Image: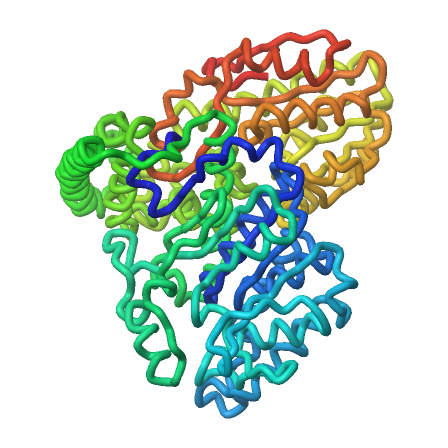
Length: 617
């Protein structure tokens, strides 16, 4: 999505941002925040998926914890799992004192024990796999210091010592506390140590998605620290660091207070990072400052679209409330008469409020924020609820695929939920998802009819419904070794549970992602059929071409590779992006052919479409 000047409060590019693709030494600065600093995990996941290597890290407070684990060898996905465990209701970082009366200064040691256990070792800085620079504040000199020698976890303990919560840590005659006391990010050390490109991330707390002002406690924090004897400069405390890309994902306070929603915080970091890199790839960024005339024009545009969005959102909200009362006691047979009328009204609304989405980023953010004011209504649809909550940290997870495959319109406790289900499951994108699975299934059956021994692999397999569908048509003498690969262990568990045992079928489950394939750390063996239905919509061209090349190497002579991708003509795009924040890379038939030709130049290439004409293979 194009980056407007207004969006620089969230995303800021320097004049040399375009140099990312040529950078030889990329450094990342990870910001503070408990638990909002977990946006850094999302950033690391995105950079790994985009195959962008990190050469060094600076970390402040929470960023120091994450930086230490990552520099010590943990993957970004392992960090996500650690985050979920650390912030679970029964283990809130072991910061609560034994009598549960509040925070305890000594409980910092319990935290360090837990972190050492998770890391599996207690390293010196020189033993780390990636150089790490830990930011802390020194009470004696009243300055930030960079820790880069000695025990890593001692330095981290200093960087997280927030006044009144954890005792200061004494190292080398310095009395050290939370690195965010003076300013939250340090990018200078990364440049001085040789980084030629620096990406920084710091969560921005806001009251709510509709009230984006800083929470009062954040505004008062510098004054609070001054009373404790710290010579804090408010200008530095809220300053933006110098770097090539500054990411400031907004985190509403209700999200920050709910430890069960860590995945949603991580998703915010993932989304803003992924979009930033995509914009650089496309050249859609504005490093220069706008003049006063341009600023005024942008402000007027945003105000106009925001005003229109409020009118439209209020209209649909009133309509939904009336409809909920009208249909509350309807039987299913009677309710079916309301389905087409509701689908048209709801569809017209989204077409109206999102028609300017690609052009005005800030306006579209305002639209989505207003739409979510009636989330309690749309939550009555299990599918819509999962779309909004994204419990796996991203859209399009295995359970969302299950919902679309099952097409269970009446799977809701309320009639309002059933209406929403009908609208969502009958839209072209949902139909296309079901259609593409049938096409893949048919192509596999066609190959199995003439070849009794088959090796098949599904990349980013999700729930793998096509496996069960294929079994119904196999000959008795068929023998298939079917490998299901996915980075989400829950998806693999779901497939393992639902695919029936069959003597003609041998299943292999592989927990791995794009990064593993790109690094050649996974050997799939020689395959007759390789396919991926819902992965390439998330990969920019360079990564997609490289991945096709890697997969093609596993293909037997005469083998078949099947790649799915949504066409640019997807009529459900406004709904997916405007409400669900579900962003795909849409491609034309010509663009799909070009990916194939570049990734597998000696192969034969063709493109087919499912009956809706919006999902290409």
